[in-house]
Image (tube, rainbow, N blue to C red; front, side, top):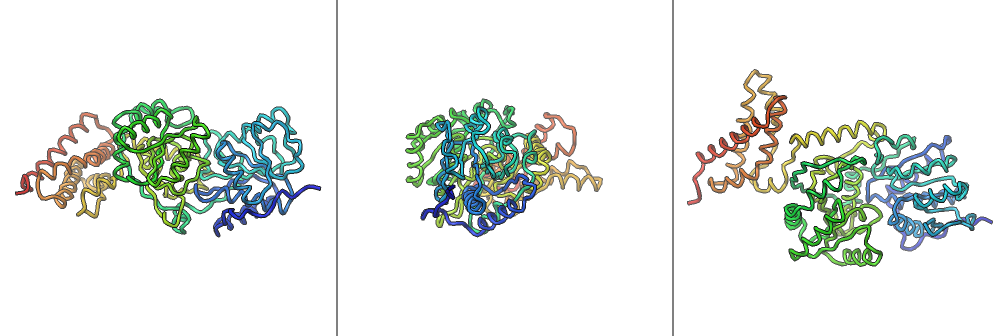
Length: 509
């Protein structure tokens, strides 16, 4: 007689939140009412509890149907995490690892958990290696590595789960394999309901000239290393940490092992305790580093790749992106490591050293995932347009670190494009828009200083904003040379200095 494959939930099993119970119900209804047995993808932000949700779905499906379920992951860390979650949910599961050549006792199980590469190799040798699967659950469904295995399970329903239903390969959109999308609560909704921590993002400008794009659509490791291995970048990273994260438990994400190890050495040389971790670290090293991270209030771990998925340390208070990425999925995965909520943790810090927030938006920004799922090409085109605008200097957010230098100013809004076209539509000289911008900066500095010597450093920290405004002005003209831009910048600063020098005493008496 076939055993049920389930037992009582463990005492330490995570309790389901109301919103998780609601999505389990909705997904289950789709599975039951799905007469065409169409594949489904479920979206929920990182930290929302996707593993807990699909573990409970597995339990309910086995209870009600007594049919076989296969759960697929693409990384060993996720395999272990999922195995633990299933065990806590009381599910008797067979792990298919590289050591498992045959499943002689296959009829004793209703749940199978496998690494996609391992199972694919087994099925290549024997298509009947795993039989009579009725439901396939795919964790991190946006990865294309799962596609190659789907044809072995044509009779099964496939349920994909992901935080970002955007394929890792834009030529192979998810809608080719999934027909329905179920959207979970947004990041802002989970924050407002108290399930995720809120975040403040601090951006530090980094010159990213020379970055190259690889075949995967993201920046190449070599081109990133040329920037992030530089001594000046290490200094900027340490400065940012000391300004915004000193004493906080911190994860630093890098683009390569070499950069991460270089960051570790630099911090240690400066007397700052830090440990490095990457995919080549052995089990003992990983265990020791993660234990140190867990137990040390101000621990810093610098890593690459290994902590983006299958890792959960709720006490992390700061995420530092010491890299640039064009991948929205990777961006959300990295930041999501800090979003776990605790009774004494409702907020965490993001330090962006790759202009990622400008390129991809703030972590909390609303994303219409249904539109992304249906029109991924349109969404990616929008992101690439933002990137082009960034490269032209047409996207700029005044950093909080700059705003803090002007405590008496409450309104930092200034729209150079609007000013330009207002003058243009009135038949006035559009060059006057620069004088209006100078006046705006003049008034801001005057409200926050009493002498010219103190005004000079304020002018200096406004240079990025000044250049941004001039870039917008240049773009309105359509055609302008680099020499003309340099002339405008020099003239802008001369006029601003002259006005302040004429209005303020040279120094405090």
